[in-house]
Length: 84
Image (cartoon, rainbow, N blue to C red; front, side, top):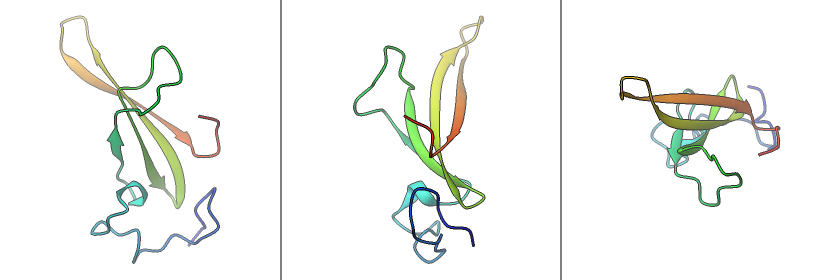
């Protein structure tokens, strides 16, 4: 399998499995939490990390409201290498 970008180890299904406590590296899943130290005036509502095709990606979730007042989630996914 391809190595995880930004990390020298190979993606290990034993460690990175859904039953593992390392939720941020489960393939196709992202555990997102409120940002600890927001770095801009409009930070995402939640941030997290996911693995797509063996590479880590940042996940930014913004909770917004449409014109009718309904809440929805806007999700932005960026490669891990990009500056935060």
